[in-house]
Length: 84
Image (cartoon, rainbow, N blue to C red; front, side):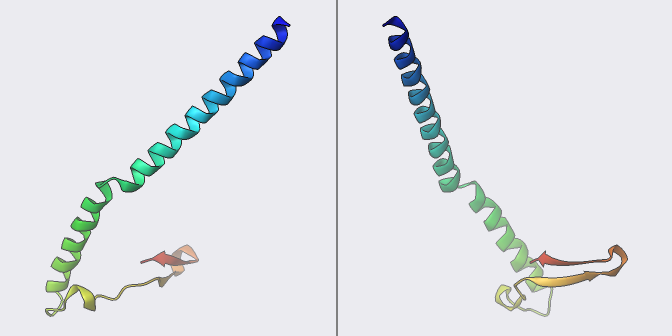
């Protein structure tokens, strides 16, 4: 009977520890997604784009071409399509 109580206690500890870990991971994931840290980087990027646009014939940030571009790097014998 003692062995059954021990196994039940171990199973309960493993279950509660796993549940607590999942809860902490979910909380950290939510906190990371809602944090304001990325907004600072986005604000700085917008300022840089606006500043760069003023040097190009007075064009606004909306006039800067956006999207995925293909860059042919012949000296590396490769094509890069991940430049945005």
